[in-house]
Image 1 (cartoon, rainbow, N blue to C red):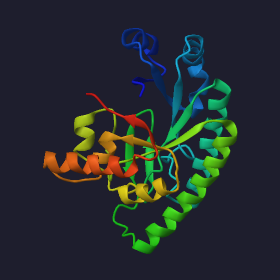
Image 2 (image 1 turned 60 degrees about the horizontal axis):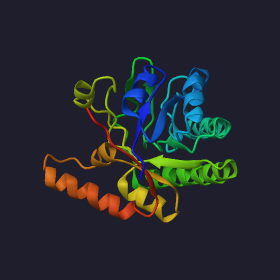
Image 3 (image 1 turned 30 degrees about the vertical axis):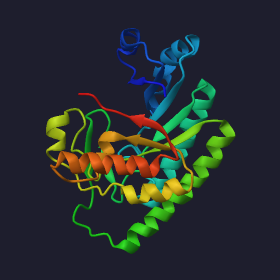
Length: 239
């Protein structure tokens, strides 16, 4: 296992010089792709393996979501493909992305805020299964495309709720958005399809709503154990 660090377009060189990581993940905002060229040149020159963590907005205002409304899912898929193309061009190893939630949310990447839509709408088991089948349809297309480009496509575990913002860990998480993120049980189904998985420890624990630390740790452990066959990337957040 290689220990790495995530960097963005700001202060990346100082962070890399300080931490000297064995590998790197780039917080990759697709529409800013030109801003990352210096980072990519540096990583390739120094032979440091790296991947791209896919971020963008859909139609300029929605969070990428292959579980959501079909037009949003289609554009999400198209933009993930664009990121895979860039990853291949940059000689990256992987592209990491979120499947996202049963409800669509607005996303402002500049203000770093989320707002879930139709909060009171109740989703039936039939609704969720239909949306999950849509996700699987796009995952199969992504896997086929990424394999041709020799890029690993990691789907990342996510929390049950979105924070209201992600610039402030404390206040953002005190006002969660009822987005209904893809459940751990569905990740177990994805695991059976041998799709590469990124286990985000914080996101995974965010599926279990409890203040019992032992129960929370056991939930994380059992999830990791169930998905171990296809976990190739692990995210750990340190605050």
